[in-house]
Image 1 (spheres, rainbow, N blue to C red):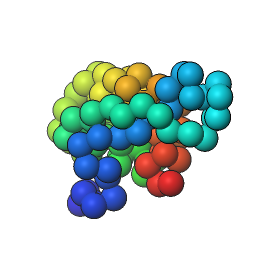
Image 2: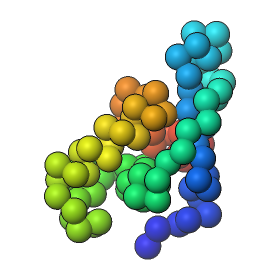
Image 3: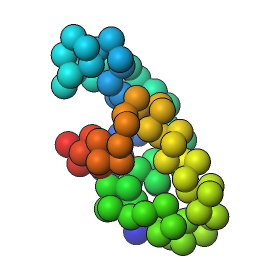
Length: 89
């Protein structure tokens, strides 16, 4: 069961490249995450692999991988751990 209250509704604060250079901990760019991307973020935070995310959401592993890549790009993160830390923090 997904915990919708724990996901920042409609918008997420990503770290822009400029902000990361000035202050690495400072969120600066508001980006919209889709409903599906928000579901994937929560599953990423639980430590699931693309294959496990795909099974939970009844999608193909390749589709799950695409969602993860779009989330990383939107939030300007380079790893799944950064997404999980951002979500839990």
